[in-house]
Length: 120
Image (cartoon, rainbow, N blue to C red; front, top):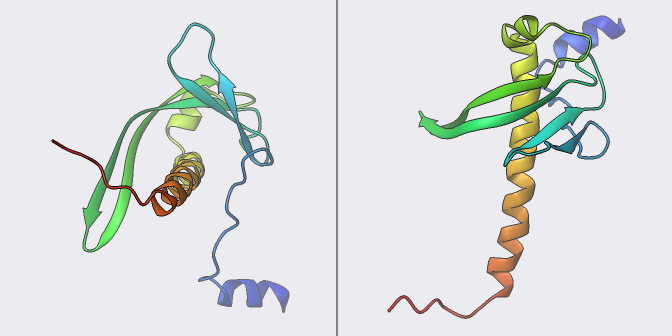
């Protein structure tokens, strides 16, 4: 019965990845990029970084399009990761959480600062 209930609740939202619990930042030596290491799940110990990022609006929805480079493939081959839609979905979810948390930080600053910019 429980399996049937899980199938019926297909619309439930998946768990959001949490910084420090599901992923962490990784300082890449001698690089301008910051890496991300996955801490839990199937892709535990995989480290990668994001390249070019684009937000595309289609039919009223925003879609993220991004490039990434695997630094350490953990227990996986790099080619398996690059061909895995599941891996891309997970790192896309992590990127979404990073963008949302950064926006929230900047939003509180904009709401607290009532001075207008002098653009002259």
